[in-house]
Amino acid sequence: MANRRRLAILKYLKGKREAVVSEIAGIIKLSIKATSKHLNILASVNIVESEQRSLQVFYRLSQDQKPAVKHIVSIL
Image 1 (tube, rainbow, N blue to C red):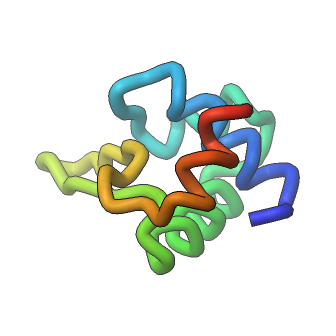
Image 2 (image 1 turned 135 degrees about the horizontal axis):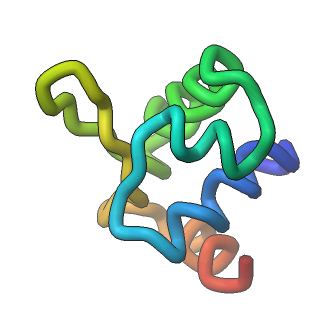
Image 3 (image 1 turned 30 degrees about the horizontal axis):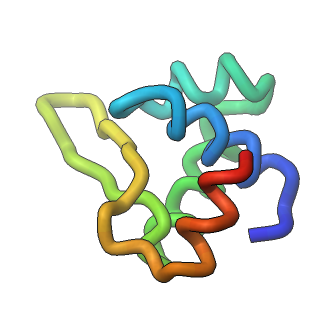
């Protein structure tokens, strides 16, 4: 969670309902492949969740975050 790229992803998603990998990658100035890897790490611990729609995967903040995670996201 302390990774600055993952924190940037969370900060961006906090202000959006959901976003696709390419949009997030463009905002945080990281490759799509690296951004996808960070999103998969965040999804593996239920911080973000994904939804496949056609050819795109949409990511959003998970509603089932632990209280400590919710607090960190709230102060971003």
